[in-house]
Image 1: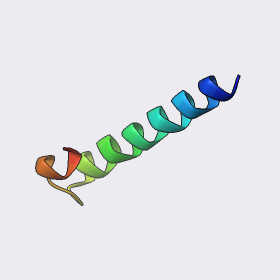
Image 2 (image 1 turned 90 degrees about the horizontal axis):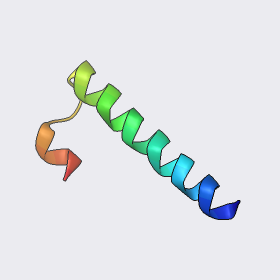
Image 3 (image 1 turned 90 degrees about the vertical axis):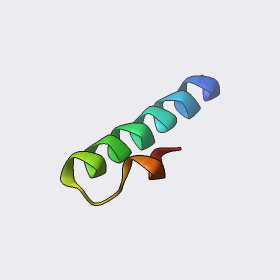
Length: 32
């Protein structure tokens, strides 16, 4: 269960980064 929560939190972080990318607040290089 704890592993699932960690994975979900990671996905949430990735989704937020993608959203920021679409909003143009960060560059593609910030993803790596």
